[in-house]
Each structure stands twice: as C-alpha cells, then as structure tokens.
Image (cartoon, rainbow, N blue to C red; front, side):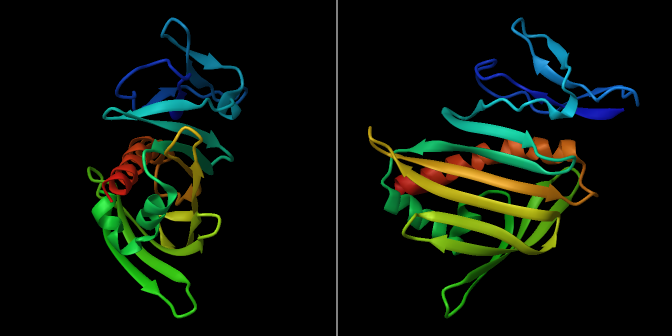
Length: 222
C-alpha cells in the first residue's frame, strides 16, 4: 500500500484542515492516483497520478488564514510556498525574522538553537527541531543565513546535519497599499529516506501555519 497525498481545492473546507494521507493500491501498469476533493465532497482519483497540479489552499490556524501551496517537484522533493498578511510595518517584521537567537521563543518545535555571528556579517545556526513526538523523530541542521536588508529578503540554507538532504527557505516582505505587510514564505526540501514522505507532508501542513502565525504575533506585539 502506497500513500497518496490528498490535494484540496481552495474553499473546499472551513476551519481545521483534514490532515493525513489516503492509501490505495498500486499497479505497475498505471500511475499512482492522487485523491482530489470533488464538488460533492467525495474523493476521486486524478488521472495525472502524482504529477497532478497542486492547488493553492487557505489553511487556518485559530482565526488566522495562511496561503499555502505544496508542490511535488520530484519523487522526493517538495516545495511549499505561501504567506500571511501582518498588520505591522516591514521594519518590525524584519527585526523579528532576523532575531535568530529568539527563534525558539517564537517557533514551538525548535528544541535547541545555537547562533554564530561572524565578524564578516555572516550567520550560521545549529538547530535541532522536532519532526514527530510520537515517533521521537528529530532533525539537526546547520543553516546559513543569507540576509539582504535592502530587499528585506532572508534565506536559510542547509549546509550540514541530518534530517534533510536539501533545505532552502526564503522569507520576503511585500508592503500592501491598503496597509500592513504580506510575509511571503517558500521552502524547497528533500527529506532523508528514513523519514516517510507522508509524515513530512503532514508535518509541513501543520507547522507552516503555526510558524507564520507565530511570526505575525511576535511582529505585531513588537
């Protein structure tokens, strides 16, 4: 039995998102089907298999909604993108994003966090995060922070560790004409083979909204 990711059409649900994966049989003669939510709320297979186009979603964390898109770039590579509107000016959000020492106070699944700031302005972060409490799975990564204050763009790139073979996350700020700022987020990742992809996808779906809302709350309170 191979796991099949559930892709939800925007507006197909309100409130807490349906986490988890759907399982189905696999035939060598056919592509593995992907489940999509039909207009009547029933799940039906997609003829495109695992390459079916991803659909943008709105995920909810409390009363806040987060734009979310999970794409299957390759067999094991995933790309997540989206963002959240924040009622704060860009400088306040930028201070929150670049206060790397305070990350564990903002992001709940970070277990340890050691920041090294060098004389040349470069920053590295040795970080341990919880992937699954039930399975006692943790990731350890050394992240290189690439900071562009002029463009207010932050990139966190994996340079070592275990848990992910590839991990590149970017944050950028877009001031809105109506007020406030849109925090845009994207991450490309390849998990280690020991981590089941359905578990990683489920964790992404849960943790990205929590992380973005946590950054929003910290920026707005600052």
